[in-house]
Image (tube, rainbow, N blue to C red):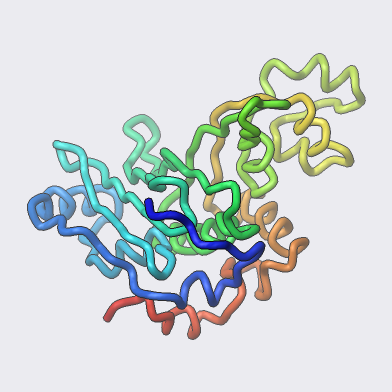
Length: 254
């Protein structure tokens, strides 16, 4: 990537989504496979414009579309001036459960990125994933306390509503006053729970259930609200700005 300019400490939703158009790489040579994969995952073909909407691509970003050789999954790769490398997302149907999944394969920010950049993008993506009928987000939350490279995904993703098991921690949790903890959502809802996990937790698989009746949405909404990033009702999980403003953002090509 080119050398990054001096970055602001924070960025608004309007700046993020109203600053330039999204560039989409040519995928005409795999268009039939992409169409087949969309039928499997979404029940219909998606236009290029809809793929941009699906991933909630920020203005000025570049989107690459890919698929597996059998046309059963869709890979979207998003490059943005504030990203460290490329963000990678795979969309597929779980062969065992039939669950429609988006897996965050590689999601990282540069250390100097504007504060809450990924949080704003995630909030917009959650709204979009729901609208396109997906069931859950999956990822591997990396890191552990005192990681030499400062990786703390194991702690940050649960703050944003992602749920993880607490397998292997039950004896220590009980010994320190946390009885009958079911998972990280449960732990993070308790006094001093987030602090305990930050000091003692570990990396593991994480899931965000997109069903609004389940607690992931509520947890994310609380996080956004506490930090002043959300200015709408929780039933419409869209950060700063009205739906009309979002639809009219200049990165949405006609």
